Amino acid sequence: MDFAYTPKVQELRRRVQSFMDEHIVPRIRQYDEEVARGCFPVSFLEDLKALAKSEGLWNLFLPHLRDDEPGTRLSNLEYAPLAEIMGRVMWSSEVFNCNAPDTGNMELLHMFASDEQRRQWLEPLLHGQIRSAFAMTEPDVASSDATNITTGIRRDGDQYVINGRKWFITNAAHPNCRLLIVMGKTDPEAPAHRQQSMILVPRDTQGVEVVRNIDIMNHHAPEGHCEIVFRNVRVPASNLLGEEGSGFALAQARLGPGRIHHCMRSIGAAELALELMIDRSQERKTFGKYLHMHGTVSEWIARSRIEIDQARLLVLKAAWMIDTVGAKEARQEISMIKALVPSVLATVCDRAMQTFGAMGISPDTPLANHWIWARALRYADGPDEVHLRSIAAAEIKRRQPMQGASAAYLTPPARL
Ligand SMILES: Cc1cc2nc3c(=O)[nH]c(=O)nc-3n(C[C@H](O)[C@H](O)[C@H](O)COP(=O)(O)OP(=O)(O)OC[C@H]3O[C@@H](n4cnc5c(N)ncnc54)[C@H](O)[C@@H]3O)c2cc1C
Image 1: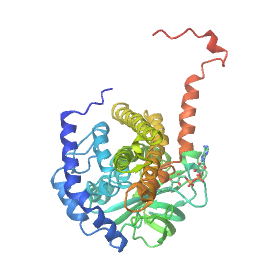
Image 2: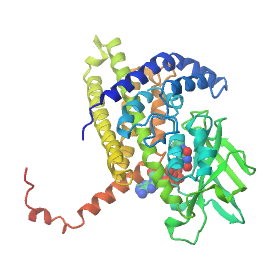
Image 3: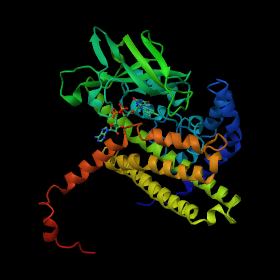
Image 4: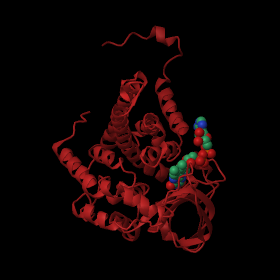
């Protein structure tokens, strides 16, 4: 494993950083003001997207683009430090067409869509002309176990009919959201992991009703985490993604790379929080000392550095594994970063907020927003406990040949 940034990555980092400094950071206040006035997408978004695209800073997340598809072909390892820069401003990844959940959806379509599905949905997504959502979670069942999903996808002649209720569907309130990738059951009698399928549902299909945009921790996201009802929604049978019964496998394929992007961006957000903590602790004095001279605050700074670097190394390892052995083989590393990084971000933000005093939880710093998002990430793409369960299961499986704790006495010490 060699995680040194290559000259190509260093050059791209410089260009993404310059773009952020020149075009995004100066617009942070304007973005917040426009969203507060209900203007979403904000007025300058399309111009910035066009600029990023013209500069080749586009679709940086997708390694296997075809020749006729727009973007910069990077490995996951190469993309990680770029996503990290984007993570410092929460909305910036959309400017580079690298935002969730569209990235996961594009990856899914890239792997499994038919030619017609690619033309209709993947091409406009790759060009940033439309947005999309991924609809799996349901209010009526524990959705961290995807086999519980109950939404029905019933075949009727040359159509499928969809009935069910979903919630926390990110992006569904985005005015440009045109596509919902819906997970449901095509065959409730099949073995547990073959009951599910995914189907492409145009957002404006009759019977699709966005009931509400759910606030998370009293925070309103303009793109939405929506509750959606599907009432006798009919789509052509050709809208099925992959084959009947493949939904569970498709969900696994989609969530791997998608999860790592959240973690890459979270490292950048944690770096920002640490920088702010250090700056603030050098400006303010209590009891005759700058804050960083108090042992508690200096320990927060030190621990944050250790935890961020640990998290980054694990994220880079997971990226390297996805690149070299594929997302399936990297499952455990992906679960490890998913269970770790949001908590690291939340902890570092928490320390930084505390260092700022009351200002830390006001809108005058980005800390509260990053902290809320870090907390939310502990559910999105599967709660921590489900990832910990997978990691433990893999570890235990690896140890199965052992004969119990007493075997420790029988095992010769490893040669160094
Ligand atoms: C901000 C945000 C965005 C989201 N975006 C989307 C989206 O775009 N599309 C989508 O489909 N969903 C989305 N979700 C939903 C998310 O994927 C689910 O909330 C998550 O999978 C958990 O499902 P659940 O809420 O039904 O919790 P449940 O399945 O009811 O689980 C409840 C709790 O049980 C515990 N638990 C579960 N299994 C175990 C276990 N094995 N061991 C110990 N404890 C366990 C966990 O603590 C878990 O939080 C989003 C959620 C959030 C917060």
